[in-house]
Image (cartoon, rainbow, N blue to C red; front, side, top):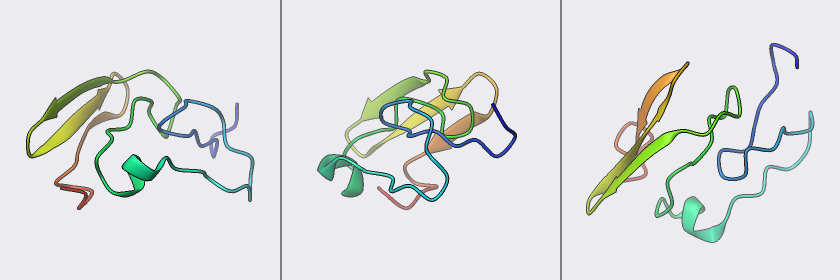
Length: 71
């Protein structure tokens, strides 16, 4: 596992360098919260509420739909 390894935030699978990152349609619209950390691939704690979501990785902190402009 290299330092530049990236993971799909919806499946947790490691992404191939230069490979296409396929997003589910709901995720592309900002309706689906990521379930895995894009930095380490760990499962995150996710809270979905009527106006958005937040997700917390134990190592990389919290991301919020407002911060990613998907709200």
